[in-house]
Amino acid sequence: MENHSPNTPGMIQKLITSTKRYASIYSALWQNSVMRDMQFKVNFLLWIVVEFLWFSLQLIFVAVIYSHTDHIATWSKWEVVLLTGASQFIQQLFHAIFLNNIVALSEHVRTGRLDFMLLLPINSRFLISLRTVDLGSFVGALAGLFVMGYACIQLDLKPGPLQIIGFLGLSLSGIMIHYSLMFLLACISFLSVKAQGIVWGYYNLFNIARLPDSAFQGPFRMLFTFAIPMLLVSNVPVKLLANKLESPTEIGSLLFMAFACLVVSELGWNWTMKRYTSASS
Amino acid sequence: MSKYLQVFNVGIQNTLAYRLNFFFRAAFNLIPLAATIFLWRTIYAGKAEGSSIAGYELAQMISYYLTVSIVDTLTAVNEDDWQIVAEIRDGQISQFLLKPMNYLSYRLVLFGAGRFVYLLTAVIPLGGFIFLYRDSFQLPTEAITYLWFAVSLVLTALLQFFVSYTMALLAFWILEIDTLIFMLFAIEYVAGGHLFPLDLLPTGLTALLIYTPFPYLLYFPASIFLGRTTATLLTTGLLIQAFWVLIAFLIAQWVWKQGIKKYEAVGG
Image (cartoon, rainbow over all chains, first blue to last red; front, side):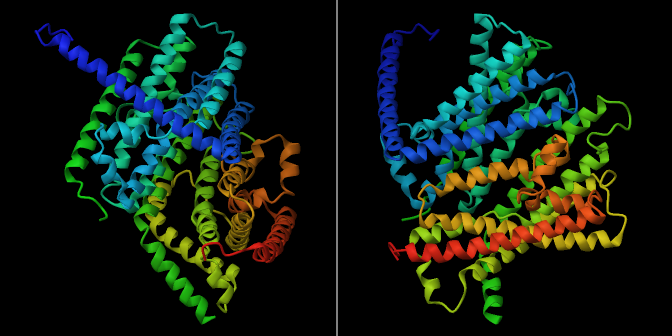
């Protein structure tokens, strides 16, 4: 937008109309998802219970570990609870907005539905990534926030408005990392429909995102910071909130890695689209 | 007998098609395993040299997680329950009512075939991982331990199978069966000893858990292997485990009978 060529007003105009168009499409997709979820109310409620159980299980893990030790590297019990809550918050938001859509991608390839989606006069990646919303996961995200609030009280933390805004911004970057990496894995499933296991394998990576970063050293830490940045996704936002940041470069690494992952996943998507020749028909 | 050999063969052929999937699954499972081991190392590093937690020194803690991974590879159900649910929903189960074959035995043989193929694909990633940790991995000192471990392992596999089989059969009545399976799995994840050795729980709770089926789904064979369950504890443990296997089998048979009565072969 720095470029003040004669075309600029026209371009801005175009950008506004296209944003409006996509916003209205996305709100239609939301309405669709709400209607679908409300058709299967019992199922909707049961999934919330499932997620709730898994979250409690992580908290039990923390409680049991800290009944035998009072710190893990530099992390105290309630700091790790804060981390577990934040990780839940970030992961459930990712779940709500993206997860099911990405998992469905290989199924769209197999059934040939993808071909139809590619023909629609809309950005294909937008449609594939955002087609459905999983409302129940927002409840899970709220549970994460609730636990975070409780941990903050225990730690006697009173984050200022800037810290909270910073936390939300960094969480958003974390969500983008989860999204980009999983989308990239789903692109691999184009190569072989039977490779769905790869996408589910991503679940294992979530496990790392909720562990305190300083528990890890050496190649493992490097790998999960600068190649698959799981140790940044929720650690950095929490460290901002808990005044634990060692240096501002940690924030820089998270933002940079989020951007890098997004770029790489876009390259991967374009590459697969060039080679895609339809699985069915 | 020979018809079940055929089923075993077919099961192997079918699951071999998913070997790549299995391989990735086994390889990806190593990531949280490695992370957990690192986490415990850091915890022990923060304590005095040679400290133990609930009777586990660092090497024993690492051995616990490695052993649990082996038991899990050999006994866990991973696709069978979903396949049974699908067969009930699609009405494919009708054909078994006509065949001279018991559905439970048929499924059990397929489960065995699936485990066999999974073991073949997982042996390289998991074996390699254990080799990396060979200095910490503690093997049983007495040969007899291997025998009791093997007995308990078979009972664990049977218990795993009967529980999953029964849960899947609930699809005769319940539409939202997926959620129930995930709920049970979550409870099993903690109470079965997946997340941490059950000895880490408050003593009263561990003593209580030992009478529930959960430890026998994973923790118990691992504790035999690590030499933590011996003498009378071993005998009573095996008896309790056998008891739960029997109960689970009877429930499975009963649920199947009720399910068939209810079944209407929609779409069959």
